[in-house]
Length: 276
Length: 203
Image (cartoon, rainbow over all chains, first blue to last red; front, side, top):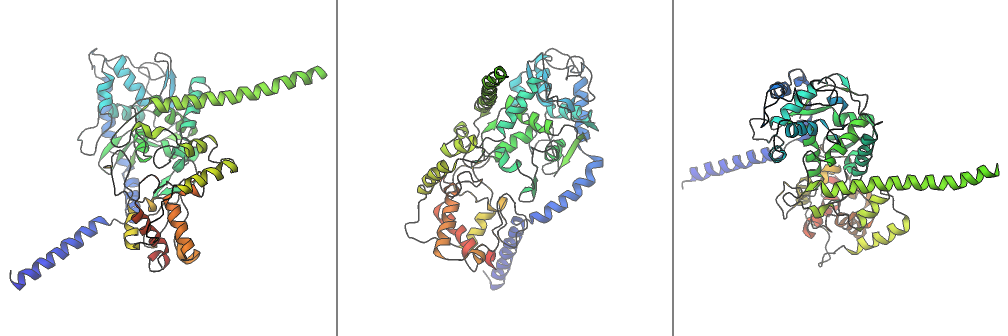
């Protein structure tokens, strides 16, 4: 190797080293600020609308082994075919299922009971992954139904004793500390003004905090370009809590969603959102 | 009038009892749901849902255990701390900074095994150059400068990182040494991050 080649290769490796280092050290504070700027700008042209459109198609199409549409069979609590305001009134008690259900769980229930889909098939991959080109049908459906409650107030009926009970159970679950790190939901979300890194942590016990916890879901996430539901958010919280994985469309998730949505009662829902 | 008092006396305790029972029922149902509605994934098994003694006490007292119980259990936790055989508590603050930055470890999407990050910046302000710090825990900026660099302070920091529950039973901070998240060497490096006069934390 000539002297020149050695120098060149040293320079190159130095350059590569610096470049790699630059890639590793992200200025989190700056990134947070920039993301927030774009996020606010993109609210007018939210990609979530595309998913809602797909959901609209799915809602009206005859599908599944029973070849019926959700529109002609699925009661979201206000009557079959009544979609306006359904999302902000859930979780609610459904007599036909004898259970309190959040919006996503209710739609899954309808897909299974009315259209004949298998629960296991839906639960196998209920959330959109970073490399997916399409969202699961259920995500599109939830986004569509959520869109139909835009500008309406959250109104979970705590006077219904069944709803009240699952609300109280949710309140109990958010305090439950376990796992290797001794974390509960409330380790992060039970006190005002907390942050993990730059991420603000809403206090879900209070109306303002609960509002931050429920607004913007389902949401389009710029990182990864994925559409995600409130069920997904609960799933990923448990991951970060170092807990095992919550079962999809379970009482566990409904309890948490009942707790935080009811705490946000009266807040105006702005429709599917956009997240960093 | 007398009759009324008797009636009230009989009635009040049973009301209180009913309320306490109702609370117990909700809690029992919550635990039942927690037991039923999780599934294992990756390294995160169902066993993680079981409360150990400390968690059980903290969960049942709203993180405010009676002082006598707290003292006994804190002493237990203190006894779990394995002190370095070489007696040295200070490592390398530069490595400590890297450990403090890393938030990986113990989630179902993490590869099992070491090294796990300290997750420190998630909750604490530490070095002056890092602005993306959390506020769940207190600021540790100028830690040594403000509190001193002596051997007692080194012992305190080592023990606190190893097992925060030894000092405050229901502390929100994980027991990093006790659960095997951080090695002895990693904890030494974090001690140095806070207590080496050359560390940016103390500049």
